[in-house]
Length: 428
Ligand SMILES: [Cu+2]
Image (cartoon, rainbow, N blue to C red):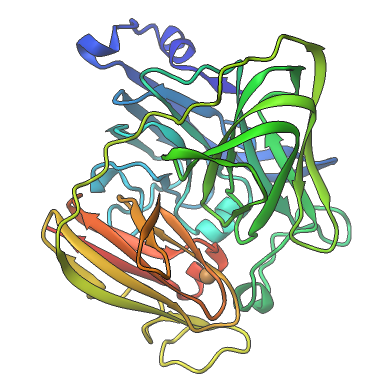
C-alpha cells in the first residue's frame, strides 16, 4: 500500500495547498499491531504497521511537513524512528534519550518537516531487535522539488526471516544470534512496490535494507544504468552500477533503463538468491538522454575539527575481552553510557575514528546527522548516515554536529545494539 500525499490529504479531507506558498502537511496514521504477513512463499504471524509488512510507504515532497499519529496496538511499548531524517531531537523516537516508550493503547504524534530529498525509512526503535525483525518498518520517500525524469519510481526493501522447524516465524533469540554476525534468516526476499515494467522504461530503484543484521551484496540484472545516491544523499556524479553492499539501515538509489526483466539478486554467499523479480509487460522507446545526477541536498559547512574521538568496537564471539557488562562494547562500555562520546556546541565539526576490533562487521548509524566517510588517503567520500566497518578495519568519519540534542550512535546490526553497542553525542 502506498500513501501518496494527495491520497492522504483526500482521505483526511484536508486541502492540498501549493508547497511554495504554505508548505503542505502530510497526515498519516501508523498503527503497529499483530499481523499475518506474506514473506516469500510463507504466511507468518508477525507485527506490521497498519496490518502490512513492510508498513505503508510514506511519500512527501522535500521541505513539506509530516504529521504521524502512532497508535500503539501492541502488547508492548513501542517507538518510531525516522532513519536518516534531520529532525528535531524530540521527534527522533529513541528510548531514554528523546522520549519514553508509547504504552500499549497510547497515541503519540510525531511532527517534523523533511529538509532533504531522498530515500529514507521508518522503524520501531524500542526493543528494536525484536520489533524490527518481526516487521515494524516501512519506506519514507522524500521527493525532490523537481523529480528526475523517470517512468517508474520503485521501492525495494531487502528482508529475511528465520523459520522454526514447523515453518512458523521463529521469534527466539539465541546467544549465537547476539554474539556473531546476528540472527540471519534462511528466507531471503525483497519487497518491491511495482511488479511490472516496460522494456525501455527509465526506472528509479530505491533499495533499502531494513533487515535486523544481514548485510546484502546486491546485483540487479535486466537494467543498464547508474548508482546515484547513498543513504538519501545524491552523488555529484552518478557511478556505474555494479554490486552494491548494503548494511542494515543503508540505502542506495539507482536510475537505469530496462533492458530485460529485472531481477534483484543477493550474491554475498556461495549461492545467488533471487530476492525479487519485476516482469516486463510491453515496450516503449528508450530515452536517448543520459542519466543525470540528482539535485544535491544542502550540506552543512565544514569547519576546523573541534573534537576528535575514537570508538573502539569490542567483544562478540572470538573477540578479545573488554570491561563492558554485555557481549559487545564501545570503548569498554556496554549499553548507553551516562556521558556522551562527544559533547559539542552546535555547528562543531568532529572527527570520529571507528575501530573495529572484533571478528564481525558492524554498520554504525548516527542519528540526526549525516557524516562523510573518509578514505584511507584522507579524502572525504560518501555523505551517509550509516557506515559499514568490516572486521579488523578502521574508518574515520567527519561530521558537522549542527542539530541540537542527544543523538544515538549505535550499531545497526540490531542484535549487536541490543547486546551492548550503543553510545551517544550531545549537541548544545
Ligand atoms: Cu554490530
